[in-house]
Length: 546
Image 1 (tube, rainbow, N blue to C red):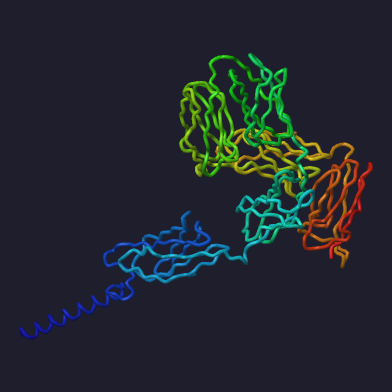
Image 2: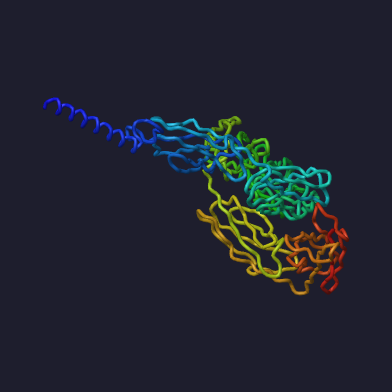
């Protein structure tokens, strides 16, 4: 009897072990794929994306769990809350390929932190912005690209230029060359899926467009006072018998003016003026005799920016000046005393923020200020639209807290970027047109702003030039995308054909004009048209394209 009971207990224990084993297998325990931590803990997978792209790369995880995230500005990513198990992780971003494209991982009771991907820009998915410079100078013109990405290039001997490897986004191209001005001042382009051919920039020698700075000295002395001009140019002159002085052939820019004459001091000791498209009159300097020591306080700005930094002097005397291209500045004719010098320029920080110096019967030098771009500076965009009789090529001048100029695109849209908080005035202009309102004021306060629409109306007595661009082979109109037509002569403008192949320039006065299709890749018949407007619209100015 006891032996039978012992045998029954043995069988019962065996059955319990058997069913417990089955339960462990059903629950995935006891080894195998290891999909659940025996301790119930969770783990992380982290890593880095490097190469041609860092930020906003999509990281996807599949396998024992499905998760996703994106990389931060440094290319870092983290996936958390993971159990033990097998996973596959992949990186993806439009316009880029990654090495490896994916990788297999196994989490087993420990975090994984060394996953890396290298991104490479996919050149097949990028586009080109190209254009041409014509006019007084065509080669070695600097073209600056800003917007979705930034770059610079130079026009070649034919005036052609291009920016390659561009992704989708909005861009602005700005030409520049010392001694020349360009019309328009810049052009906008939007890349979606195709290359963009911009309108023509027309260059004009600007060496003849200079201005005059005039001023006077009064008080204890007038004649024979030396006037020193520094900043964007360095010149010197002396006052005449009436204390009058002038500087001629001055280009637009920032300048510092300081008088000096042995035995005299002047109030103010110096002054700053800005030449911007007009002659400038400087404030009067008042001379006095006394114990003036005629000592000079000098210094230098180094670092990210050196030119046109505003330097403010306070303390025993007050004055302002600008640094020259080498970063140097000076305050002449200072009396003995303690002074504080403070540099400033929007978008930049300076170390130190200010510096002190003492004039004590000798010249003095301030320690260098080191400039650096202020990454914390937040800027905003001001946008608007022109509607009515003309939309494309309208010049918009921005004044107020900052000064910029741009032109509208074919839809009449325009925008100004990189603006700080402040009050601005936008003013439209185009020969042959009136605008309502004539200008608009808007205030930027910690967010982008929009200007109310301007409505363009052709001025009384103004005329138009119109025509059609058609196929040389079929004779039918060429539909959109539009073909750009440049207008030069007694007025300058740019327009483009619409869906039916027609184009029109409105608001033109009597005069002679040249029409030229702007297309680097096709030859038109005729290549250009000379049109005379004489108290009537000029129609039928057609072109044919191969």
